[in-house]
Image 1: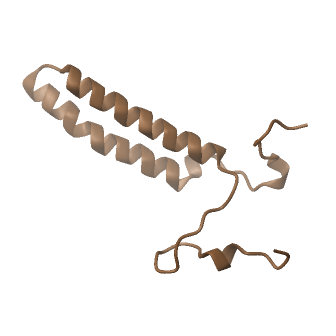
Image 2 (image 1 turned 60 degrees about the vertical axis):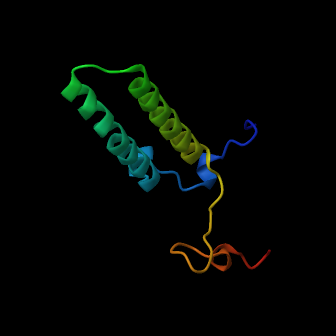
Length: 95
């Protein structure tokens, strides 16, 4: 018996989190957002409360993004005018 909302790995094509484009995009976005904050702190030789709060917010939202990616069970689609799979690409013949 599986917990609610837990995928059965034998029925999914699981991959390492490190093989996920979403993981690397979130990680690199966090680094890009934190780097200027740290750069200014080093230049001024002090880290302020505001800078610390900004770093914590960036890390928390990155963590939420990654948690969402790990827990995702369903594919997503994009509108026809955006790159990515369309709704019709994901529909099966028995729906």
